[in-house]
Amino acid sequence: MRAVTVTPGVADSLRLVEDHPEPAHEEGAILVESLAVGICGTDNEIIAGHYGEAPPGTDQLVLGHESLGRVVEDPTGTLQPGELVAAIVRHPDPVPCPNCAVGEWDMCRNGRFTEHGIKALPGFARERWRVQPRFAVGLDPALQRVGVLLEPTSVVAKAWDHIDRIGHRAEWQPQSVLVTGAGPIGLLAALLASQRGLAVHVLDLATDGPKPALATALGATYHSAPVNDLGFEPDIVLECTGAPSVVLDVMCKVGPNGVVCLTGVSSGGRTIDFDAGALNRTLVLENNVVFGSVNANRRHWDLAAAALAKADPAWLSSLITRRVPVDAYADAYIQQPDDIKVVLEFAS
Ligand SMILES: [Zn+2]
Image (cartoon, rainbow, N blue to C red):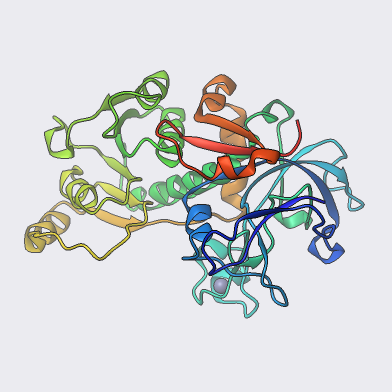
């Protein structure tokens, strides 16, 4: 069968293999026909040779961690043939650490977790794959065109879950949220914010292209000015750019008892002149919390599936700005200016 692979650590080794082996039974009882694979920055880092690890015994890694497929067979009866399914990316470490031991692999403490398409497990950019029932998430049949957004939605579902848990350390009645960055993570974070009835503000540098309209379609207010020019103090900030200056600005901008969730990964290596004492003073005197969030566990994947099922399918579909057939796979990995989410399609 066909599969999109790389040799991890070797730049530009991306290729479409025609005779990739069928998925091994050990991967899981549920056999799935691949429909689509979403592409994100992690894929591009792997293609550039900066990141990624092949499964043991091979130097090839099948790419793709944002999956959507259709069940071919499930002898366990967990899912029915024909059902839409996505697979959870991360598997617990083998020790396991205290968090992995209770299914919180998103909070793994020893870093020995594995991840499909990223770290020691084959990805989903292949015609067929297998999944164990506990890592399989069934999707509403109406999500056939957009269910590939489940993985990035799981990431923001975790962020919101943790924001809620932190907020409830005291009486908490948040009114407003600022989302910085209107990429797929930022816009999906804004979607979940709008589902909570909050006043949503989305900030991004883009003044044209699809981002402003996607934000306002959620009922959000779109800003392209600097954070410091905003005329309000948000109760919650979801930082999705990873840009160091934006990260620092939102930590200072959040209101009293505020919660700032950082989801963007900065590249590092740049220094900024910054008054750390003033930041400390603000955090202490206003009881503010700044925390980081990555990945998602089973509970978050299920929350994400529920969030997608109640979202507007047309809005979700417009997040997918390019759909590339697998024959033209290389085009999918070349970023274009108005891309939000690019999807590689295997079948329809
Ligand atoms: Zn662990």
